[in-house]
Image 1 (cartoon, rainbow, N blue to C red):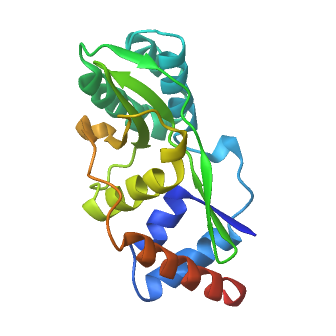
Image 2 (image 1 turned 60 degrees about the vertical axis):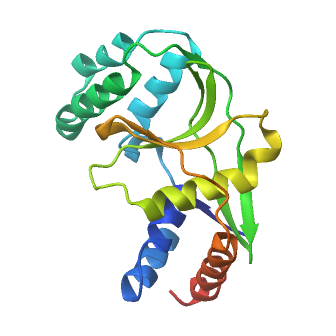
Length: 199
């Protein structure tokens, strides 16, 4: 079985034509995952650690002086600032988010929101979006739809699926599931499965 991250899958689905096939090939042939090459891992882990331990967003800011990678020095402060602006004075409590695999046509997509947060009394499963590129509605819809399909059985009543556009300090919670999107995503996975041996 071939395994994709949710980000991989969203990236592929968001493209068309030759760029879509190129993206499948890129995922297939890239080196095995190494934490040291995951640009956002340090900050992602710090955000999780902060909420799990009930710390303030100042704990995120304290990460900046320890950075020695020039690209992280350039990017992390803006992300931390965006996250802190979203957090503000909200009352936020942590809970462990569930994870699942969405499996079709021999392709498995990891559905793993980074955060489980109760924000001012409302619970969310949150997928973090770190990139500077604008977050499109299509990307949000795919991510939250798959979260709804795969994770709803693990949720308590009233929990919402969300994507946090960190740099823009926006928590986005579209209405899910979306009719017909499951069939579309099934077709996308069939395409990836058919293409995989040939790229």
